[in-house]
Length: 410
Image (cartoon, rainbow, N blue to C red; front, side, top):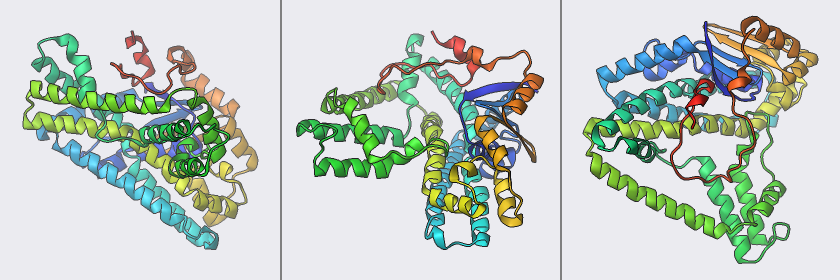
């Protein structure tokens, strides 16, 4: 089996299991009705996330066949089901945290099982397969653009205009909300450490609405009011009102460009479905992960209660698998504290059909890497460093899905 590095990302054990198990064919098929679609193999090797190269090729071919036989309507139906599953996950997460203190061990067990199996895994069945859907949809759109545009050099810019998310994601909304706090402070000559009551209320509402973004993959803490005020100190060095105006102008310009492009392309009804599908999946690309992180934040009081029942902390709980948690709740089979601490340093999570293997600690992780990847150093094709962009950019971008595609960047 040949593994392909999907992304370099630190995940807690519980989060990695959600993504790995959720992407299996069994769950993906329930959404799509397409037999054999999905990823049965998933590997979290310390901070490296890898998927099976053969499954990438198989899924790509299955999607091409699906489109050839049924058009793009099924892709839209799948996207709507996945978005609905994400919304149901968020709704259920809120219900789990209602009066968490009153819940007993048996109820905790039942609710955790339902939370994990029925909600988290169904919503995350889109997490891995979406990279293949993105790839196939992109190649179809580029074919249309190549056939319709006389100047092939304009294809990349046209694709950028077409393949944008169908609606704003939470990260964009957070950036806009944060700039509005800065704009208010500058209009009223307020320093970040001397805000008036209105500004403080804006900060509080911002933390309540978007604080979960900082919780990462279960192991982070939500933004506090004072942390947002600290961020504001740097933001106030620039003109926040001007940035808001520039962002608005950029959106309006993009809308005009979009209208001109669509008038020029004269898309057929089926091609319009293709564009709609592309935009839905660009949105899902972010929303699928955000919904898991937000659900984890909303359900944290419930998960903290589960941890308390087991006699451990929340940040210990997230380094257990769901099977370990349910087995501990149900049968009293504890995971030693030493093992949990080793996992925080390094671990291997290997998801295969009907089986999940977990190795704990740097020694076992090193042995696994040496055995299965003796001549390969994943970091050699990774981009590392500090982001120099302040968060706003305009222009064409090259989408990199795997480390092996780094060479495509000019």
